[in-house]
Length: 168
Image 1 (spheres, rainbow, N blue to C red):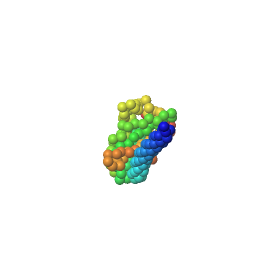
Image 2: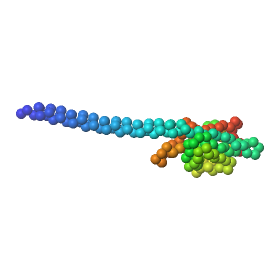
Image 3: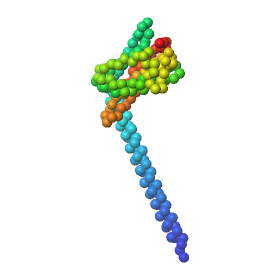
Image 4: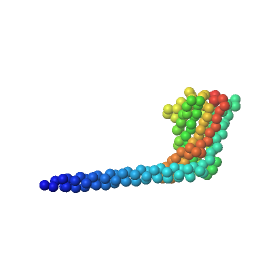
């Protein structure tokens, strides 16, 4: 009999169901992707706005013989720092030290970091081997933006260099 007509009708119906299903999947995926992107952008904008008020001053402190053996991190405004990350930059690498990521500094406070006294400042960083090659130190402040979220204010980092490299 007329089996060709029924077969075409079933094929068209299946094709329509497939296209609608595919459209729903793509729509849900794009909504999720857009939502995640908006959340990340919101956090980034919030971070930039919060970090806008952060101001640090880094001072080199000289020990005996005029050799720089420590630095002082000074908070120059009323935004408390929830810690900081230290980057030791040598000629061919940068080593990130998280030993002070929990060192809180209150408004207009200061912290002295003694390079010589902190030969082991974190689990995997051995300053004893590294310190003589350091040409620059960067301090990246961390602040709390609310709800227990702590962010790094990379654009507000303080730094100072040594010429020639540090010799302790």
